[in-house]
Image 1 (cartoon, helix red, strand yellow):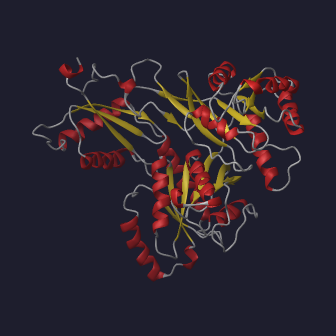
Image 2: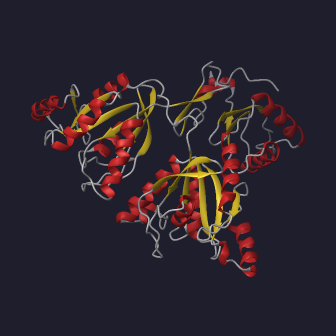
Image 3: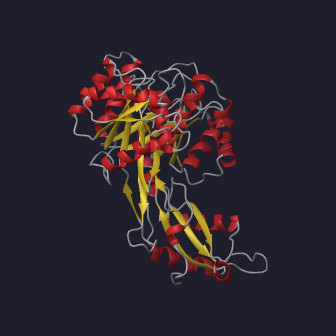
Length: 475
């Protein structure tokens, strides 16, 4: 089986795309053996209600960050992938920073401070119509002491009449105020050009390399996510109550398990579809989905003492769509009797049939039973998520499989698979270059055989098909 010479692998739709904090590149230009490099991060900071999330959406060119007229909607650091002038980078939205915050606002401020310390560039957003407040001056003082490049964005400059007010922000000592209107887009292009000038090609050394693996605890409300986090940390890190929906914002905590650190994130229970939720439940759902996207492996908690519900299935769908490694933890195992175990086996065969590859662990968060078994399950799932199969090994295996079981005939012609490559990891993504369309059933067959040969337990596997166009049509 030889490599096709008339197909440009570098333009395969959806293949050379972002992989979380990484982008896949093709240094040789042949598209076959790409590798992943981390993307630099720019943090958007400022006091509450100056338009940070609106500016994030303007930079992204799409509505991702939650925007409301009331202050304090954004509470956590959330990263989004952006692209400007052919360069990819991460934009980190933060909550409002206040120097003397108390309670929850203090936690929000700490998240913003962390973003300022770890980002490769910082954009301080100030409301030009209000001018520099004492809070703005306090933030500017912190940023002037840091070694991180800083840009000053004078927001809400909707017309030329506000330009003179934006000029007064030179007093903050951060250089030129870049006048923008995040709501209308005025000046956004100039600000983005300035960001690219100070943003390095690759991020500085940080926890991207060898840092704690990020684990999201997800599930329907009241399934025991916060109880599990408290058991892992041996503290009351998260609020636990019998009332469903106690957790609203994701709660991060470093946990030592198996002799090393993990970053566990307790999330709000997904109760409804986002488009039917309202109020804080709507924002909690968005933050939970953002936590799933930001994680590397997800622990889906299911109440083993109750039947698997539609809510459980909905959460599972969110994890599958995000392409994250998966461990299913059946919690409250201390409440399961023999009859319930038999019924649960039937429910697993029926309701979890689409994820036979997911690793499963039976635990009790309240008593701590078998919690340590999460470590090998997480390790195995992440190993599969990061696994890469060499092109030669993959094509040698594929040749034998196709010889034994060729693709089904479609439209009177049998499609031929010419070449295969693993285009990405996290999750493992394979591209097959063929002369015709491959039926969904045959792709599932190849995935099953791929797992039998190479493993991938605990990780989704994506198989994309690229059909070669006829030469005369291409000409």
